[in-house]
Length: 110
Ligand SMILES: [Zn+2]
Image (cartoon, rainbow, N blue to C red):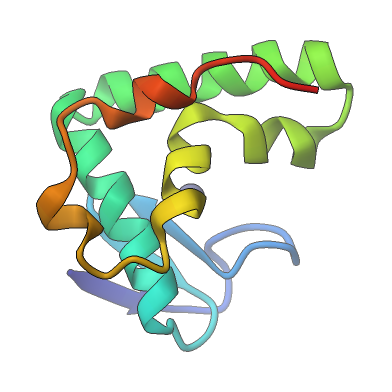
């Protein structure tokens, strides 16, 4: 996985790294957990031909923002993020991961 270290992307102080089309842009050193998190996103992107991943990501974030009225809570509850955060510590998850596993995390919870 390619990592581009820079001072600008991702925008905002709360985020250390972002995965854009399989390339990680990071403002600081990425540990193995962060890299694993982003690798899970790369798998999700590939399943959705990249474009549909970003489209669904934005739609799901917007829908959850309407529900929760909190942009960070909406972000953390996006099914793609919920799956990645749930398994980022499991370094074997990628090789055992079922296709479209993020669908299991779509449910709405308070
Ligand atoms: Zn993520």
